[in-house]
Image (tube, rainbow, N blue to C red; front, side, top):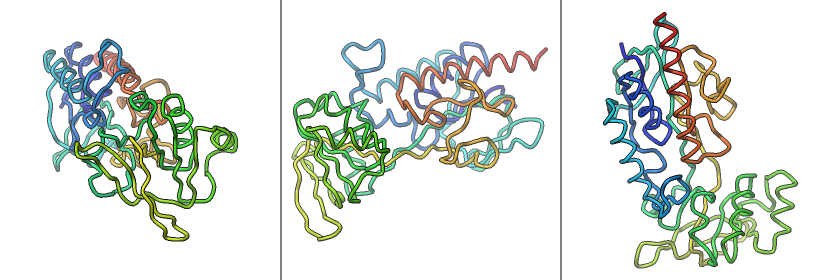
Length: 307
């Protein structure tokens, strides 16, 4: 029987591990198939407090991992595939083995949706990203493009006008799916040029492996052309990594876990943190904050159990 199991090893999971370990709870952290979460695919992080010169995403994760280990956290690469809350104790299935725990912190994150094009994984962090807030400031006075047509794409496009010389909004339909107020703001901004009825069919990198251009195809005419951009921002949504908990814990229609306060789920002993519950901010620092809250709430819950 574990006292605390933490699912996920991104900023939320590792912060929870640091706090839980310092409370002498000896947490078991299940890292899954992508240790470090989305930060492990990010290059320079400039907006995490305490690093005035910035820090590489993977290095930030390594530092947090070491810090959690220093205080007694244990790690396993096991991936959670099932969850059972029907008995007295919480149980999760990780790599075909059922584990019992008194408290569970779910910090399994969310995965950005990508186009599935050739060389996509290699270009992530090298001119291909899913977060304008994270990476927009790196692309000052150069042309960029945003792929998508919803509110997220609209928000990303408007944010990028602060930095980029030109923002191309590439959408496969002939009008945006975003709310009217957001669509109106996009269309009124002179820095943003919509490219309708168009999809990206290829990423084109330079000799250094950085994004140089994209190949576009008009879905009505079939015409193809190359568009020079320094970065591609994919804004077609995220999927929370919560499949194992569907139908057993409360989620919204898109699968994001629901918390009744900052980090406490509606099921006793289950706490949530990071992008698995946060569909709004999706920042490393907010993930870390909710990871801290989840660990503190878990410690309080376990203290009550011992009384």
